Length: 301
Length: 301
Image (cartoon, rainbow over all chains, first blue to last red; front, side):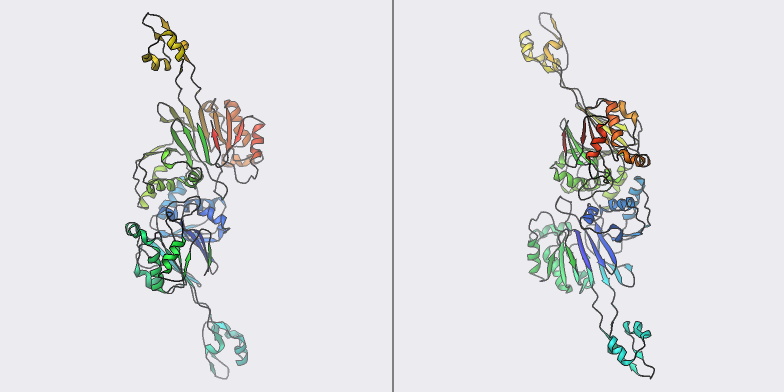
């Protein structure tokens, strides 16, 4: 998995800070999560190929998470895109996009699909043989959900030397990689673990923004390889978290610690803070493995 | 008048080019014309005070002319603006903005007024004692109009020395500046031109984008101090002008020459061209006084 942060700041875009958007490369997909104003320019700066984006997941209908969507779709039209595009968003996103396409006299030369929802329990959004995307209900001023993107189990690694020693026919290899035992012609049953090794572990990425401190998401993001959790404020502004339904760096770290995730990435900073290292410092008092999102940063997961 | 170009490129924003938006400072007003994606960032870069913008004129509903509007309004909300804001746009702009405000759970702490129209003849949009704004019907793929912003006549300049020599009472000064003659106590009538000098000439700014070549706008922009006319393409791509209803630099210059304007500013360049001096060169074969718009450029009118 490769995560590229296109923007990780809250509220309004500035010359130096982009609102939320990121792309996750996973098993051949390039999933976009959120699309604040200026995202299409950030894609160009980060040399992300527009045509590779086929699924866009919108967390909630606050402008800093979706105002860039209509502009990006319009650019897709101008570029003559033909690959289908699916937008997973809260109820209302379809009306917003289609109204603007209608009034601008535009049509999409590609298939534009919408998958809207307002479910407050975890929901399956996307699944194929390699990846599964589910929602993480969050607690914000409008309906908001995060996303858990999980690789499906890799196949077991074939032990070719052992297979040849036992004289296993090559026709069985596919079944062995799936974990099956093998019965030889002479009737002997060879256990799978003698013919294959454990697969590489599957990775998972949990995106949680925007949200008040919500401990009941811990089971949903348990053992995630990487958790991106918003930290709009520092503890010194905890009263603003209560008022605006955001989290502090310490609260994000508490979720990470309780869920025993691999790494915590902090983001969605209020632009009132000049020094983002303060977020890392506050979080590391609770949980050690903390990274700071930065516009343009790339994380290998 | 002071014109600041926030963006002057067509179609999609890039890292180096902004779509259309500009602000015109005139007699205490700061009028915004068009508002493509990224305009609020361009305002910050150009150090324009957000609160001074009270009137926004939208030429047409193509994304590169209004996709930045909802983000800018949202930022006005976050900044706690209280000054009223009036948006003059084609029919539909109100529905687009209000739908997004509703679905984002936002309310404007200031009065947000809309003045929509679809008139295909010149129309008065704004008038006070110093300025008048009217529309210039254009010819594009969707309903489009430009804007003519004219200063109203300045008052005559009082000739204080002459007034004192004639013994004119100070109480008459206001009337003299308005052009009235004065009757002295002894019955003599003093002609106004003996007591005052001609006022400074009024200036006007005509904005024409986007449009196909449309010679019938010439009487509407006649003698404008400055004409901004789109030149999306060069003559070598004139076939694209026909197809997309845009103009070449030569066509823009022809309008400028026929209307005998003071200066022509070219803009709305297709990003296919690397060297914008080609536009100036092409236009100057028709009309001498040509300037090129650039993002961030400021023109004193």
